[in-house]
Image (cartoon, rainbow, N blue to C red; front, top):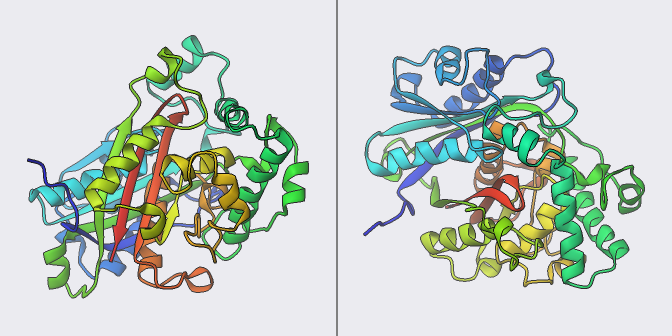
Length: 399
């Protein structure tokens, strides 16, 4: 019977670049920057790494879709390197590969890297991905956009719970205002300026009810992690390392689009994935046990839905928690302490690892002005795709 990975794998080093418009840097330079920080943090040497995983959704360095960009950029010593891609959850997928490899006993120390140079594509938003998703967009769902798809989830949520659209839009604005406030204290965030609820509600509309401030930024960046067994971490002098409690991923079967019982007000994959992650981690009551979380706030409504999909807020009650400050920095479970996708930015292949980077540093007490009081358990929620056709990765780390 499968045992899971709880407490079998430790993170011994992480690195992350500033996310933003890096016109002067290539993907290679971003990967090297993130890697050097992680390597210094880990206390090991490059030669100690046994295998690596590269996550990139768009492809990097003009050498196709292979894993060679990572090996070449870091000058890795003839070790196996695997490239993975899973839409916006690509960074989490790279970490999952490295973690599972260590947990299986196949390798002692592994590297996970996520990187993306979205600004170089020339698009204002996300371009078509070099995979089946592009074909789906052009031929099967030619009119769908990311803002449009999530805007429909927002109106479905308002309708399901009888929320006046104006009140609902204010709730979304409160979520974005929280993230902007948090992003101010993060030197690596793309957007570091506060925005009031009033400013957010008056911003230009993108896809009703989502305005400009309800949408995350498009950025360049890289993030990486070095992992090993918990036993080896202790041998390396990590007295109380950050350990993975669970890593789960759930992909939609497409049934949401086939049947009428899905109401469009939440994400079924997230609900399924969260349940499996909590079971693996031994968490009975996430609302009481979690210290903090980073969720995939590609849009403000995605964050609101995640509160309920993850079993933190009761169905239909996320608004009450938002108004009560439950997810603020001084609330019960701070959400997006680093500013989230909304303010940190969203280079697709790096975002999942960036989320874990924040949880990792919070658990180690390294976050300066935004440091939380004695966190012990952090969750990351990384989504790819649309509300009705998606994949969700949930990871839980703790001391």
